[in-house]
Amino acid sequence: MAEFADATAAQTAVSALNGVLCRVQFRVEEQPSRKRANPASTVFVGNIPYDVEEPELRELFCTVGEVNDVRIVRERGKREHKGYGFVEFIDTPTRDAAIEVLHDSEFNGRKIRVTTAERGVSSDGQSKHTICHAAVYDFPQEYQQLSADELAE
Image (cartoon, rainbow, N blue to C red; front, top):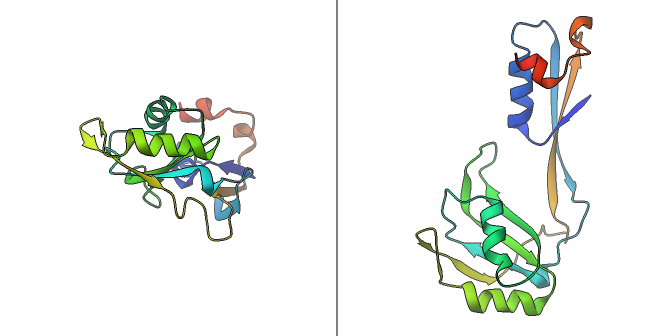
């Protein structure tokens, strides 16, 4: 069984096998994250420019203090994000400083909104991540030893 970060990565792997006769079965599941997010030290970030990704957002918020995690919310099954996300800090004083310094500040041409996160994690108090499983059956023997790069050639 192979595990992929998301459905797009799984589909890319299957596309690389174009023309190879095999059966593929997908199973997508949400599981609790290995680390618990602390909602008390998390901020909601709204109006994130659409060309910004997690590393740039992390860099901006690191100017205020130490950042534990950055999550930009994405459209289900798509690469594009929805324009908002969450940043978790090491403690609540750092969270408060980020709100004071960065709320209504301009970032890549847009005025971002930084507020206390009310729902930075799921309702059961744990953040979630998604795993996409793909089981491949009847995979030809000659392909079993090839790397992903070799399959893509």
